[in-house]
Length: 333
Image (cartoon, rainbow, N blue to C red; front, side, top):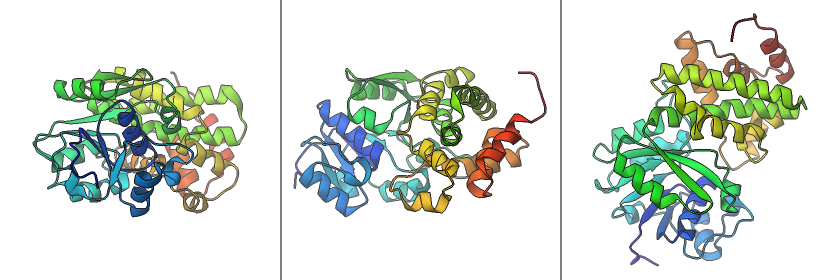
């Protein structure tokens, strides 16, 4: 069905953000094919124009077509990959021989592949050596974009043509896309803010107020910059769309999956129960593990990351880690 359509864009991954991007592209008039792993999601999108598992309550455009067949993306020249980092390796292997060498590929995945902090775009570069690669990141909560509320985002790549093409492709009267060259900083900003978002959710759950949140965001940004510059990112990137913009958004929003994890941990729920009760992946959990292990191997002091790691994986009480952070040795800013 619909096999004769000449698709302009392929979106790989039908979670909340992937479905939202595909829906947005269709609304902008682009012929878009959405690849999904789950047969039931494919059927529902094509028949009912909804994705109740990941984007419940949102009506999708009738023109959005979903598929589970990787070969249908072979001739598409613009590809957006929106797969949780923990599954990205398997999905990339599935598409490695399917993507045209002429295609431009953009990653919208926010996380790391492993504790050596390999970024999603780096994994794509390994498998798609001849393709221009870029990244998309910013303060983009799926439900708000799906409701067409105004927002901004950032496409970054060393390939100027890719940046220009995806800016034009994605931009609309409610979705403004900036361009950049700092792929490392753009990707790190989108990943590292999820650790701070979990911590912010804990503060919310403990009802600790706005002063505490401001302190967390301020010191969290400092922690992000410390790691980012060590990995070759430009400091200025962290004060832009994918750094401070995304950090502020996810640290204060109850629509953020990572914020929700922190809030529920603060209420006394165990991580296993939280994970079993939600379909969507909170990237900040694995990101915290990977960054904490990297920091330990490289003697990097990252107290907020260490605190969040302790709550997630060592069953430490969120209130206790807050006291630990507030009573650390005094220092100059």
